[in-house]
Image (tube, rainbow, N blue to C red; front, top):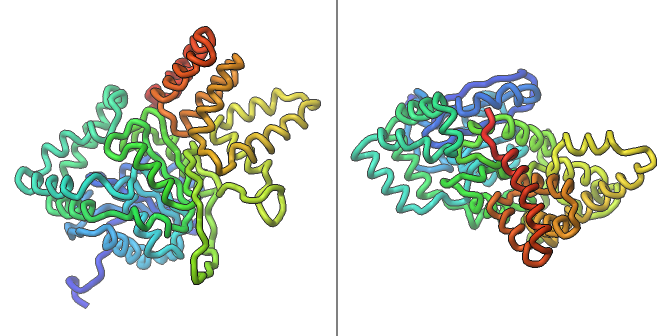
Amino acid sequence: MSDEQSPKTLQHRIDGPQDAPVLVLGPSLGTTWHMWDRQIPELTRQWRVLRYDLPGHGGAPADPSISTADLADRLLRTLDEAGVERFGYAGCAFGGAIGTQLALRAPQRVASLALVSSAARFGTPDAWRQLGVVVRANGLEQIALSAPERWFAPAFRDVQAAIVDWSVQMARAVDPECYIAACEALAAHDVRAELGLITVPTLVLGGAEDQVTPPADARALVAGIPDARLAVVPGASHLVPVEQPAAVGELLARHFEATWTEQPAAVAVPAQPAAVVPEPVTAAAPVRPVPQHRGGTAAGPDPYTEGDRTRRELLGDAYVDRAAEETEESAGDFEDFVTRYVWGEVWNRPGLDRRTRSVITLTALVAGGHHTELAAHTKAALRGGLTPAEIEEVLLHTAVYCGVPAATSAFAVARRVIREETRPRE
C-alpha cells in the first residue's frame, strides 16, 4: 500500500508504566501535547499516558482534516498501531470535541471520558469559517499574538510571562492550512442532539473565567450527557490544564480512578430505549452516578460511601480529615448520620442540582449566623460551579430577608474565602 493510500495516524508520545491502563490526552487547537506536561508526573503514577498532536501542530505532518470525526478515526488507528484497545480519554477544547466523537463512535473502547474547556458546539459555523478566511489572507501571526488573552485569565498572564511567551510561539508554529482545516472542523462540529447517546462515564471540567467555552457551555454538556459531572476551577480560563495543573491533575486522577473499568459493560438494546434522566449537577470533582437506591446492598451504593465522596468533593479532603480528627468518640454516631444522610442522600437527590443546593445552604447559614460552616460552604459553592459574583448576589439577597447585620458578617467571611480560592497559584 502506498503512503497516499495508508490510513493516516497522529504524531504521539507515550509515558508511564508499560503494563498500566492507557489514558489518552488530547490538545486544544493551536497547542501541542506539551500543554499537558505538568499533569504527567501525577497521571503516570497509575496510567500509561499517550499524548498526541493535531495535524500540522508541534512538527506533526501537515495532513489537514476538516472533520472531528475523521480525527477521531485517525486517533483510533494510532491506538490500534500502538496495541491499545481500551483507554480513558481527556481532551481540551478541540481535543474534547474529538473525545465526544470517540464516545459516540467507539463507546466500547472508551473506559472513561473527561471533556475540558469543551462544548457540544463551539460558537457559530460562520465565525469559524470567517476565522479561516482571515488566516488564509494574513497568516497566523495575529492569532498567535492574541492567544494568551483567549487562553489565560488576566491574573495568570500578569505573573507568568514565560508561559505566555511559550503559548505565542506554540501557536505561531502551526501549519496555516491545518489551522484553517481545523476551523472548518469546528464549524461543522455540532453534537447537541447526540449527547444523550453518550454512555461513557463523563467529567466536564472548565475554568470559571473561560470566555471561549464559558461555564454555560460546560453546563449544557452536563445537562445533555447522562450522569455527567461538572467541575469548575475558580480563577482559570480556557487552557485550565496549563493555568491550574495541580487542580486539573487531581480532578482527572480522581475521575478516572472512580470510573475506570477494564471491560465495557454489556448493553442490551431494547426496542424502545429506557428514558435516562440526567442529574443536572455541577460537582467540583468526579463522582460515580447518583445512587438510585438506598442502603449498601447489591441494588445500589452505600450512602455512607457516596456521602463521604460528595463531602470531600465539595468541602475538600483537608476539611473532612480535620473534622474526623477533631470528632470525639462519643460523637461518632452523629458524624455517621451527617455523612450518610446529609451528604450521601440529601445532597445527591435528583430534585435539585448542586448549584441550587449551595444557594439554599448559604442562605440558611447566613440566617443562622453559622460563620464557620459558611466559610466551608462558600468554598463548596465555588467548587460546585457558582461564580464569586453569583455568591455575592446570594448574600445581597439574604440582606433583605435575613437582615443587613447578618449579611454584612457573611460578606466578610465569603470574600475572604473567595480571595483565598481564586488567587493565582503556581
